[in-house]
Length: 258
Image 1 (tube, rainbow, N blue to C red):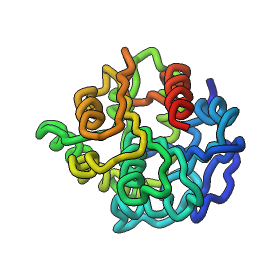
Image 2: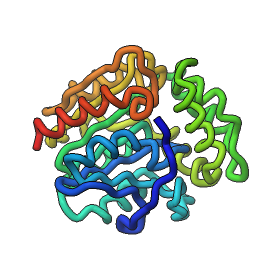
Image 3: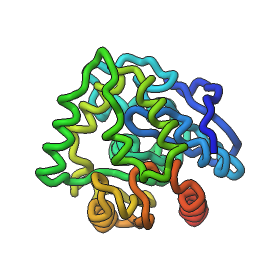
Image 4: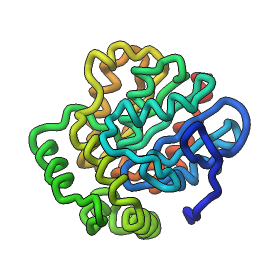
């Protein structure tokens, strides 16, 4: 699989890879990535839906300044661009944004799918993510090796190389600002999850050290309609490393909740 750069269309104030027709799906990537991370989902799901894979502010082709952004600013820009209830699919920080959209802008969200989302980090995880944030600079990108080691197994070389290129070339200020929000947030509140009434699906990998299977199970239990799935022998980058399994899971869930 190759993840080549694709042309963008305007989506509100944002830029996005847009493909297909029909019910709208909005894909939201994680920190340091770009819309192309969803390439395999775009290819498959655009056969059935209109897919919109955005670049979050400060990433990819989206140069919107993000100084002093908080979580509601990221979700608000996406909400402004959505004109009809949409299926929202987010990964990692994108899952955090997707859930915020569902909580704060429910009329814009038909259903929500959160991949590798965090929820109530333990003290060790809080210290680790704050340490990683404290090593960042707004002027230059850090060595991504440790990040890639958490995201990939040794045999996932192709996807690892692509993500390394993205992390090395991303705007350091955009990365810094997004990671600041990601590191300071602790996932959705129990109260918000209890109020979530749209269909929801929480997915992570069995080898995921940060967005753990336990977090995914707990979030799904706290919702009224939530389902969950743990991918065996998978870590953080499910859209790239486990695309076939993920695509089938997404198709089933979205068609079951059409």
